[in-house]
Image 1 (cartoon, protein in one colour):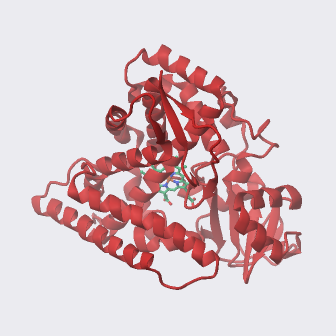
Image 2 (cartoon, helix red, strand yellow):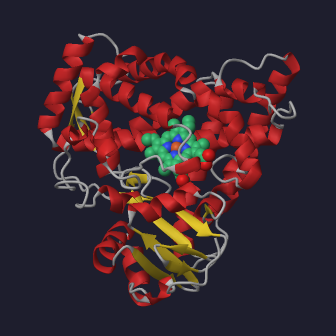
Image 3 (tube, helix red, strand yellow):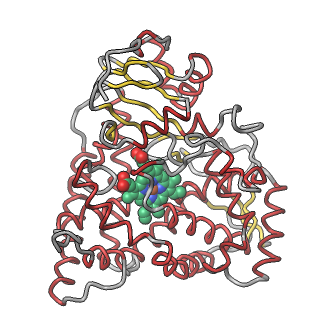
Length: 446
Ligand code: HEM
């Protein structure tokens, strides 16, 4: 859509350049929140030579997220490309469309239901190493558990086995490099560091390991029932082609990175919020006792655990794991009657929208009950979207919801996680929102 009508977004008021640099660097979440409250629905934010616009009108948000051609993924995901290559998260255009069409059926609820048992079994294994009275960092435990699960579902292997372990190590190296690099680039420092070399070595190891696994499966002709096997199996309905080794490697790396830290952090925040809200924890316990009666949860139980589900929905509102999604305008266009120049980055912030008092009563309060009676359906589109929206909505949404509910239920059946008093828990928005220095809890038997 090209338009010359209407005023430019640059005519709208927004923060000045000095404020942007100072406040964004200090606390980007607070900065976006203040911009939304003080300036209005479209807030131009000039950062050096680039124009960003924060959108806070749900209709504008939906317009942008629905139109994947006019609005493409912005630069921030491009930094991840050396690791996840041209996988679903980063690719665009007809290539993305083909890949999404091929991969979508693999994430169909019926298919992913088969992973429910693995999720509970791995959680029980983790619990065997816990005992009442232990103090532990719950975010580290959740990270390790979801990594174990994603490795098992993709490769049908345990991390203790060499191949999956190599991949897991590469992932850890990548994530710490990413945080370090983003910080130094923000500070204007582009010098090469030893971390860059470690990162490149990790990628080389990842490539070697994943290609070897693919080769082995091609040689035997047995692709397997795990996600890698399914990715190898799928065929394009138009020309019968299958994914190349490079595409498989990129999609596998994408699923590992998109699929483990997100769910781990969601669970970490859920434990924090439950620890801070004993009433919610009591209600959770009641539901688990009544519905499960001491048995481990199964996929069939998911429909019968509405309160547990609401705890996750509310966690994804109060501490949204993905704090914002950004899009770049590929053409001059119009949003809300204002001209938006080509190249503008549109900032769509779940953090801001999920805490907007126009839609949520007492938005700062953790109150799972608000999701009862199909509350979500009563919200305008573009208000609550922890998994994004439009054609590029999270492909792993059902997988993630199932995993979060099953893990939360399994752990809560055995332990209360009491927060260690007086710890400072700082929210760090990186690739996902994470507790900067973890969350320390003491285990108490239920
Ligand atoms: C609580 C957990 C999760 C959250 C909050 C989450 C959130 C998101 C969001 C917001 C997007 C859209 C990004 C954008 O529009 O720019 C996205 C995309 C994606 N997610 Fe998730 N995600 C979660 C779990 C998972 C899991 C478990 C998987 C896979 C196993 C996964 C795989 C993906 C992929 C491949 C995409 C890219 C889809 C595309 O562009 O076609 N995610 N996720």
